[in-house]
Image 1 (tube, helix red, strand yellow):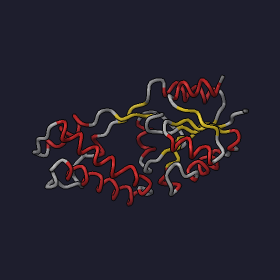
Image 2 (tube, rainbow, N blue to C red):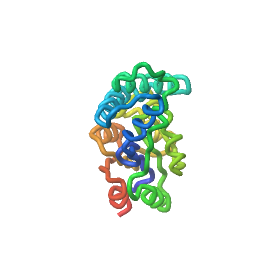
Image 3 (cartoon, rainbow, N blue to C red):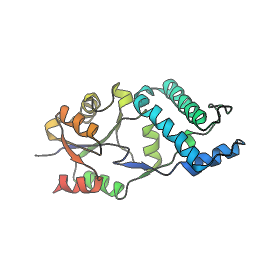
Length: 204
């Protein structure tokens, strides 16, 4: 297979989330609410359960702000801190993402090989700002833009259109069944994460 383009899933494949519990505990304490780590962890899990199936709703500035407001509200309610205002609680600001080990090198290897790249992820439109903060300047196509979440192939079709790539000459790297199912439905080859190992296989 003569590869010309590679799409990369974001969470779990390209980036991970540092443990948010200490930062969220500190944010609550700054607002006069003391909560143990187990309570905060459960509250964060409740927020994740709320956000994941709704990530594609954050498709522009207004809907992203509304989604983030609701995520903060869900977290605060689950932490028994519903008296705090979601609009002023720094929930999103407490989340810190980082690249997976060798993530930057893997992307650089693809660039040196002349392959076009894009990040394809079930995420709101805020993903671009996170990646820029990590020093990655890649095209980003989210489920919010496509209007449907993986495994729907729409987000892959949009990415291929942006890249000007033939799906028969494209590979998607991901870490979930939705990545594999969606990629194959869109006509792409699939390579499972870890990212660095997948890139080595593609370039071999």
